[in-house]
Length: 233
Ligand code: BTN
Image 1 (cartoon, rainbow, N blue to C red):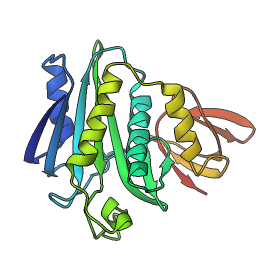
Image 2: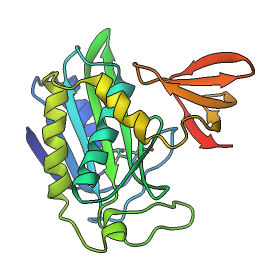
Image 3: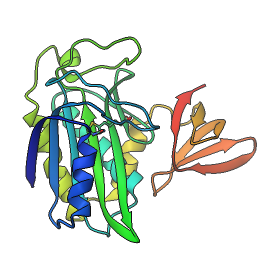
């Protein structure tokens, strides 16, 4: 896969979007040392300390993917696998956060690009690698904080690029992805609060469905939630 590296951009997701809209057929990765308008899920900003963390967006052209959230979940599982290869144990937080010891180490921003039909998927990944300090308003952890040593940013990039190529080549078994994610989802079976676009629910996080949605038991009803953020009640 071609990897394009930049010093400063607004958001690598925008570069990946352009790659797909320009109808490039091959996958590509767009990496930046710093983003001035990094985006997170739920319309949040994604801040970075320049040069410290992996900020990458993979552009995966094509119309044959599993739904974007499921691809995002696969990315979270791949990040987890990479952490495991370093000897770190990880947890998953629905829909696609990766935590170590309860603190967020990586987030994924998947986006489907539609023009009548699906043109491709962008997988934006922010992985905290060598950042040492986290401000109170953005708590988190990094590989360096957990391992007490630095890791070259190329290492997770190379690993993830290979895994993204497998997504592009349709070599990923999403049932296994959901299973692994579920096994790592610490809030499964717990009373949670889910915040979605304009709504919120409380209930028991009961399962993750094959399509990556979250099944919640609330007030005697089952609901499937496709989009949102879940916190412990
Ligand atoms: C989250 O909110 O957890 C998702 C964060 C995703 C951040 C990454 S950094 C690279 C890519 N470009 C962006 O603007 N966002 C994603």
